[in-house]
Length: 361
Ligand SMILES: [Zn+2]
Image 1: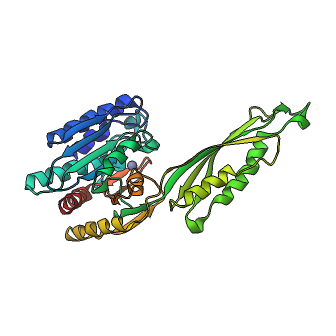
Image 2: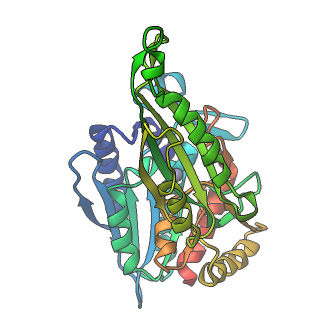
């Protein structure tokens, strides 16, 4: 709890390099004290990504994957301080996922203290997961490529703390409409409204959603126009995409490319697409889950599988074909919300589960 509190009290928003690098240095010191070999992957604008390698027995390393950026801006701590109440600990980023990183430290420490052997372990923590892992992704993939399996310490699912064996793929698309501006009173008929065109396009785009295949398309943010007495020249929409199967990405992206303007004097530009492939429920992942469930049983934990619409860096490693088990982190609730918290008494058991996994893989 002392380590977790210190981590929560070092704020680390995704968009603040100085803050992230402070957090990285703190974590590097913790892993170095355990005998880890530290490597930073320096970044210009993002925080430096952190790797800690631990030697072990035979074979390829097991990768422990996580991120130390949070969705909380600098200064959040003043309104939302670390606090403990009724068996829960609260604070920005505690559940997603500073408690998960704390578990990595204590699982490794426990294995060392017990003198129990394990495979080599590579800890990889990146700094831009919450904003799409643009710079973290190649590092995560390079490490995963050399790993036997990937254990992701992202939050678990629900009050029972289920693991995640499937995650949806995520994407975003921006649709930009260019129309023709005109005075709304003097030359209305000369205008071609980008706002009206966008409104019609949105009604087409929502038809791309197919719940029977778990494909969702969410036109989330619409912008357009300048003043009420001007026929709008510009409008745009930001659209969130989710898919359950990698095979659906191409077809969905094609539908966006096939959009044509209703008003031929308006033009459309589509940018973006799927940027996180889905983590599909592969046989290798199910096998990993089976091992985890057996270890959990010995700890009095009844583990189950779950799937989620949210993405993580586990999506990348799973899409590469590396066996990936996600949601091994803390039990709690309120990720990205002001009631973000973890259940304190479950922490040691979850860390024991992780240690058990490292020993058995
Ligand atoms: Zn996370």
